Amino acid sequence: MFSGIVTELGSIVTVTAGAHGARMVLHAPATAPAMRVGDSIAVNGVCLTAVALDGPRFTVELVAETVTRTNLGELASGDSVDLERPLAADGRFDGHVVQGHVDGTGCVAVVTDDGDGRRMRVAVEPGLARYIAEKGSITIDGVSLTVTAVSQADDPWFEVALIPHTLQVTVLGGRVPGDTVNLEVDIIAKYLERLLAART
Image (cartoon, rainbow, N blue to C red):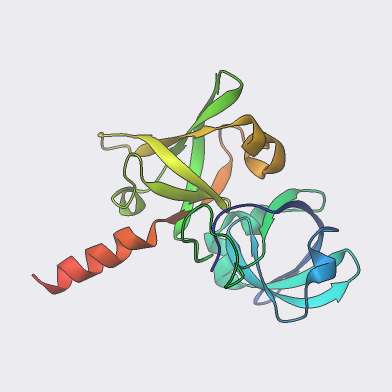
């Protein structure tokens, strides 16, 4: 389990495509030295497993579904990624409950300055939009955020406010209109829908 609090901005060293997915080497000097083979790591919000370690670098393998259903399939050498290690059982819990199971992707539609920060609007598929509520939680590229506005139209979108710190230490600081972002909706909304459906 994760909390959506990014602990390091890593970078892609190499991406090697294979018949059934891809193999990715990442540079993460603050994260990799403390890892062990088999450890979980969230990369842009996607829970992956470290399969090899080499000093400040670690390697993960992506199955075909991960490549096609997240923005990890678009990454290339030199790209930055948000990293978060799993929560320790006795650790402080910030953010919100994040599984690292990306529900889908959205497309950055508008980015506007908002004082020292920015406001970002993300277009989203209707199937995911129903789980997103104003003042609720959303994970974008592994970052726990609060939804500040949602659309009421047939072309769904939601907005978040990004403070200067978030812009500096996560990939969201470089996002521009047209970029694909990974989304994980609040797990409580999904379980609530499931429970209510069982009662009908």
